[in-house]
Length: 377
Ligand SMILES: Cc1cc2nc3c(=O)[nH]c(=O)nc-3n(C[C@H](O)[C@H](O)[C@H](O)COP(=O)(O)OP(=O)(O)OC[C@H]3O[C@@H](n4cnc5c(N)ncnc54)[C@H](O)[C@@H]3O)c2cc1C
Image (cartoon, rainbow, N blue to C red; front, top):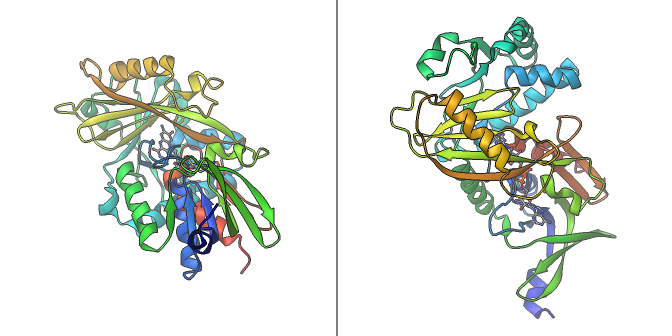
């Protein structure tokens, strides 16, 4: 039962976006930029975003050297470099939209730790640099072995260090707050605690069915265009969507006096990553230890992976240091057989952008732009 006023003012929109993560918010912003007079609504199931966008490591990254090499096992050189360029463009758009100061964007350096077993891969450094330079206009990778001792990494485990000149870091919380504010300032409406149960096609648009616990009812909202930006959770709305969820684990140390490094670090084809934040170390990864167990949308810790992270923290990143763990958390990503995101029109009024993998920070704005560009002129 609606009031006359509710019916007149709250049920009809030009575009509805499901999901208030990085991609959903950028999608709403892109739509509003293109159609400033239109009413745009973002629906988020949780009180604030609850997937990956508020739970990641804040790497503004385009791919480490060994990760790009691994990509070449499954993608052509053209596909690999195209993906690199998409991330570069997405990061530029994110920074231009929100401003470096507001999101604490910094370039304190990005390095990849190369193990003794990976040394033969370095023979391909020049080739990868040349491929990226031809597509993106700069050579991202150079050897920086001289920094290993100063960073305090054990020479027995770290045989080489590769510096990446194109990556940076940001404060994930500040970035998501600013992105939300940016959308609100444009006149986009955002409703949280609004889980979408399903959608139904209509002649001139879509009805979007949202659970309202207070009213103990399912409310149908109507829009001409629907954008599904629910990443790993998409299959509850689009059961056939070609993606798998992939959980990511993270831990954060107490502040460490005299921490010998700043910036962002990767190792093992990007499966592990760590960074300095507020004098602490944020360390994540290890999904490759239990691919099956981590193929889940359940936001929970995996004790075996957390133990592995702690061991690597104490033996590789901070050898000999007695450091306490302050916090641990998990988030959910979405992956496919290919690394590229899925950006698609599903029916006359329904579009989707999801499957950002582990690089949605850089990729999100570019994916949203492509998604809204699918609308006919
Ligand atoms: C631990 C971890 C570390 C990471 N580190 C990095 C990193 O350093 N750099 C990087 O680039 N990427 C990183 N990522 C990946 C990055 O966070 C993601 O690629 C990106 O956030 C995906 O954004 P999204 O908007 O597509 O998805 P999400 O952030 O998951 O947003 C989807 C939103 O949809 C909402 N939703 C789902 N279903 C419904 C529904 N039915 N109704 C309403 N709302 C719904 C969810 O609550 C969620 O808020 C990391 C991810 C994890 C988990």
